[in-house]
Length: 131
Image (cartoon, rainbow, N blue to C red; front, side, top):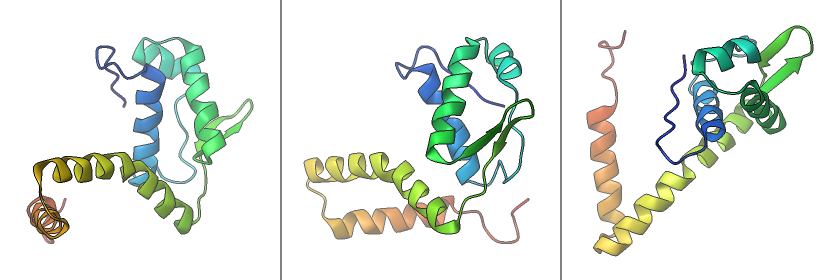
């Protein structure tokens, strides 16, 4: 379900937190979906159960999950506005890197917008071809 890369330089808990958050924001994990237990996920990923506990606690503080003691951890219900804000926060670092690189390369905002539009057109699934 999740993949962690110990060689990436990014702490394992951050990788797991990001992957769960992204799956919730993308709709791959829906409201009310139960996440694996701490014990199950730590065994599956070969990490310390305290790492999974930390991730679940951080996600709960962010409002992404709800923990019902004795029953498990579930994807929390979010308002659409909160989801949009969370998605924007999630993409912000990549956008900042893109703009910084564009400025270093001397590309204008208009050029970057054109490149983004072209990339969206090429990568966006075609209607009718979607599974």
